Image (cartoon, rainbow, N blue to C red; front, side, top):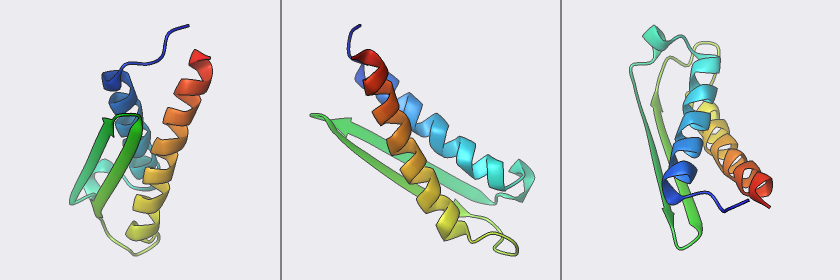
Length: 82
């Protein structure tokens, strides 16, 4: 199997991060969010910004979980390609 394209890597990471955010929050409760993913020369960078209420769940913890999940999803993508 061939290695995933840069576009596939970025899309996989972004979708995984968004999935975590909306697992914890209803879409209407999220005031703003941004998932920035770059993949250059085999280096993945994921940055998640989340502006959501902190009543039940800490938004910073959700952002951290989203970034980690994105990285894990990309690791899985490459593992499947081997």
